[in-house]
Image (tube, rainbow, N blue to C red; front, side, top):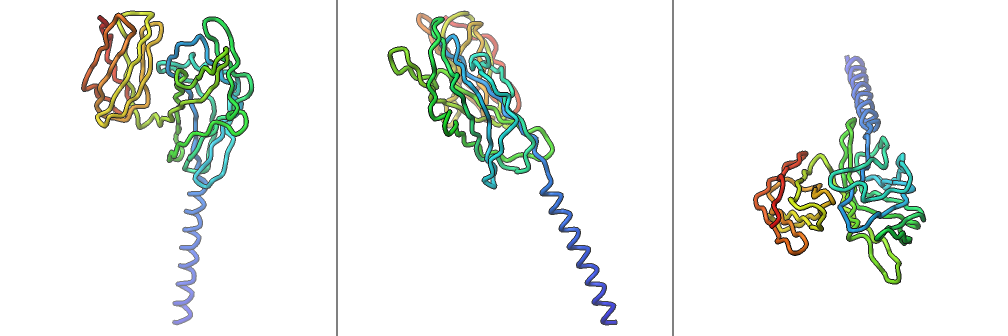
Length: 257
């Protein structure tokens, strides 16, 4: 009898061990499809061109993975007011993305009033532009991160026709954020657009030549929207603009007086 009992527990233990091993193997074999998109806020330049060479991510385990990058020269101003483009993709085995690094080449430039100037980016060419993300991925679905450049704040004029790129970039998890979009009634003027949360956090963009604007990557909640056009037009304020995750709140045409 004792031999039978021992044999029963031995077989049961082996089955449990194999089950746990299979579960562990299944968990470790999970895949996390991942895309990196890029967008930009309008800026008062003709072009702001960056020479993207590679995109890397660092996971929760500290391992760095080079993504399948669509390398090339991108004019950031082609991707404003809600327009974006995919710059890198991969299928990751780590459920965490702690950091994204953009490697830029030497062919960066800016065009101001029809004149093209080199755009200095020393740190980006050597160690890359490092962006903290801390995103948890979901297995077997499309995971995305949106890199929102602010070209206006990112370009610094250092004098004598020289310009330096010091990137100001927000990382946005699109599935848990929303947007505000609209137009202004007067076309062809410069205007800033700011959404201020109930906690006082500000998110800004600008108006393009068609009078359109879109502020992306807003946490769900209620916002005060402020449109500040150039003189002689007066600022316009809209309160209680509600944003929902995964949706765009349309505010229509804002009348400028």
